[in-house]
Image (cartoon, rainbow, N blue to C red):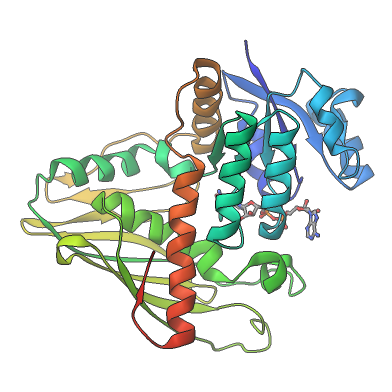
Length: 330
Ligand code: NAD
């Protein structure tokens, strides 16, 4: 049986990526929507053939509990709303996918994990790259180390922010932070899957050129993560530069990905040459895998704990910027 997914929040990512991907999925389909905008309910209902009974708003959302068409709720809202809607969905008896960054801080992530556990529902984070072939190759290289010991990592992710100056992304209460939360999280993920290790300490600094636009949130952050065995990852997140790479330095040569973190067009190179893997629809693979996990009662590879890990690191990066010190991560 194809499982029914309801998207909560019909903004850029839902309309541009997730809904189109759900036209390609084999194990799940777009069964419902949750939106506060009646005109979107109308247009989505027509475009994707969604019946009236599967359309919810933020006030009647909890009655989704009674709807057998919806197996999975996918939270695609501003970060400050992730915790509330993940917990409400779990309490309504639904499995949950929540977008990255998982929540405003690690404490919220723990509450979300506990609520899903208590409800007996699975929780997954929208880490689409865990299904991307070039990325999976980097994970394999971390395990098998054909180029010898990994010594360090350089990674950066960002774009030049030209979006709405009133966007939730620039309001700290709604986003929890700026480019680090939005883009830097991919470099933190990258450093973790490229080493297969968890960092212990971090030192970070912040840089700001546009104090007006980025009044409340970080524009550019440089950080250094210290992993066990002396491996260091130098990372950068930015709302002031179009950039996205993950470079791994190993004893017998360097390898990595560039572009490393986009929806498509990921390219990789190793000392053996250019990686030859297909481009896939990452979101379709991600949602299909979660649907299979739910159906087969198998653990997802991108569970809530994976989101919590990244938030613990992000929390420590912000602590380091505030204190000016090297900070222990947990
Ligand atoms: P967006 O601004 O385009 O959409 C946000 C949606 O939330 C809108 O439909 C908006 O109407 C709704 N909303 C409800 N209450 C709101 C409020 N109080 N303030 C503002 N909006 C409110 O954002 P997006 O780009 O779709 O991002 C949504 C989530 O998806 C974020 O967590 C983001 O990090 C994540 N995302 C993930 C990826 C990825 O590659 N995994 C890509 C883009 C976005």
